[in-house]
Amino acid sequence: MTVTSLTQEEQDAIIYDAREGDLDYLQEIFSNIIPGSLLPTVKDENTLSTPVHMAAANGHFAVVEYLLSLVSHNEAVALANAKNDLGNTPLHWAAYNGHLDIVKLLVEKYGADVYAKNTSSHDALFEAEKNGKTEVENWMLSKFAPEETIKVEDVGEDTKITYTPGQESYEIDKQASEALEAAQKSRADVEAVEKKTEKLSI
Image 1 (cartoon, rainbow, N blue to C red):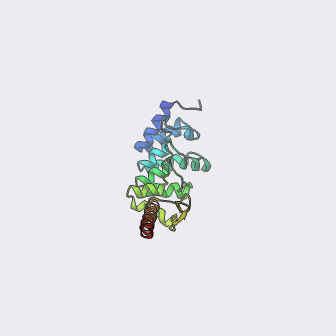
Image 2 (cartoon, helix red, strand yellow):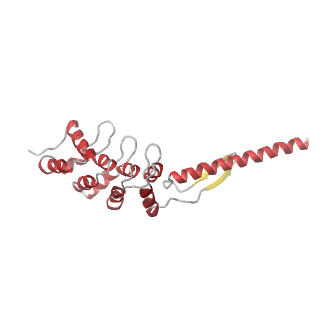
């Protein structure tokens, strides 16, 4: 009898095995019990995280590779870019935890979007930088260098900071904050001088 759907309990078991890196068991159930075509339906009912999320987060390269091989390339691409309830993709988690081999696999073979944002507006590069994963950070910068030029301009009474959308990283955000702070300080200095000038005029 062909299995056509999975209970949440069965899905949770697969997610658990992916998180633990139990490749042998996953191979056994997908070879003998559950068709690989059902993999895209497997996700945590609360967090929406998939087995690929769990394997990527915990550095189980062979498990990530195996799971993505069970489905068509288009479905594998979709799984590599799937977001959980907080908007994190498997790439976010792999980058955050410094698993460079998995980062490369997701990006180079399955087209994981390095600029995809989670609900905190962070991309995978930001997560790697924030968590001090230098090896991942350097690789991603070498492949997808963010826009280095930050333009600061006054628009009326506001300070406008612009740079290429979708390409910001932790460092770029830091630079933007510093630029804004400098612009505000400069404006405050100008206003202070103007006030002194007004008093002198009186």
